[in-house]
Length: 322
Image (tube, rainbow, N blue to C red; front, side, top):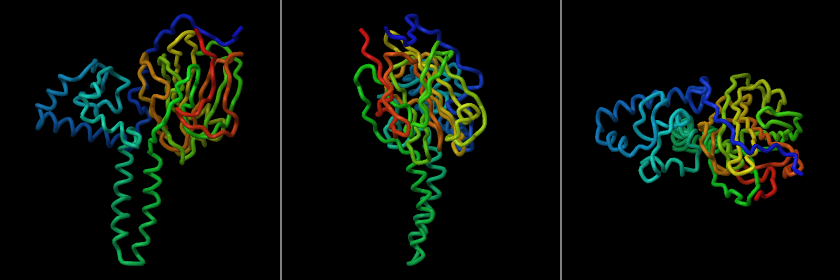
């Protein structure tokens, strides 16, 4: 008989806490610049493109209640989609192409603000006569690192039933049994993944699940390899519930690191995620935890020190249910 904690009755959805006022609650310089740009962009659209504003309002679905500013098109939802339910169908969204770029949409502002000046300097220096032009490699290296960091490569998501895929790229640094997890309601297994500066930093859903609740905890910025970082660092906790019976509960934590100080979590309580869906990112080196209900039927498929890929590497497996 299985000893895994199952929950035949669905969990109650928890309201979004007051300290989560954005998908990036830690704010940041690039965030504030982008928010200021959005303010002026909306003014310009209302003043000079009223027909576009009216058309987008007609096509808009859902409710804008809870949004901190007016929602004119999908660009205005980038940092507040977790606060409201409004959206546009893919065919009606003129900016949907941004989701298909090979870069993380939540990092496009940083890519532009940091990458554009570096690109300009690299090109200008490269045009200098030899041998001075060779020094373009100096700004070119940080430019390459910025572009590399915000990359978003495509992932083939395994479709077999019962699989839980990795929520992050990186190295498995901890697999530990927990005597009790309050959300899961019993014994649990915690798998921790360290993300270096060179990993893809997008987080993905490990399984098809419903979002039950989120909790954001401001904190310190210790090195993510330090076990104390899991307790003391800024982090975002996500409570999930398996969408299909037996409705097992699981949790994730996005934990900032010494360099990474910006956690992005774009989820709203109550929404349903598919396995492998992008849920957010941690900007620069960090740590991601996956907490699963322990039991005889849970098979952990990774080992300490193993390199994993978000949405692709199978972390654990449950038997098929009927």
